[in-house]
Image (cartoon, rainbow, N blue to C red):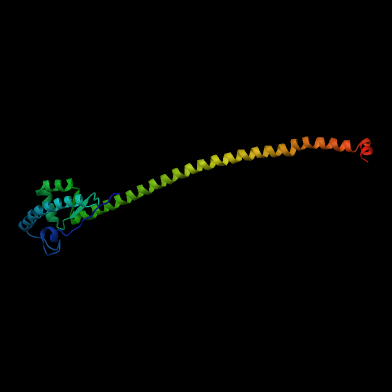
Length: 188
């Protein structure tokens, strides 16, 4: 079974340790760069932790979404550290910003619906194959019973027609013999 793991965290609280909510104000460029550089290192550690987590747990996570709640930091990560993005994608971690999160979630939802549709289609095809097999067995048995009924009807016709007439002929002769006057005199 395929599991889609979604880890949507507040990157400020998880990676950057910021107390203010994301997107409430724009920080100056040097502050964003300092936060982003620090976040890059922490995200690298976080990605290594995710890799260890997926190896040591019994669950299978195909993809992980890592939510970065600040567009400026997300853009800085994309422009400054391609190695981190490659490492994230290599470990099947997709980085999402506020503007890309809903698009990614819509794709995930559509993929889950397609997987469910595929499973349902497979179940329907299996049931149709089972029905076809049972239908073939039914028609074979139905034809066999029909042949037996035909044989029975011919046997019945033979018994009620030819066999009956063949048995009635000697009985008619016996009746004729019993009705002869010379046999009545002997019997009487």
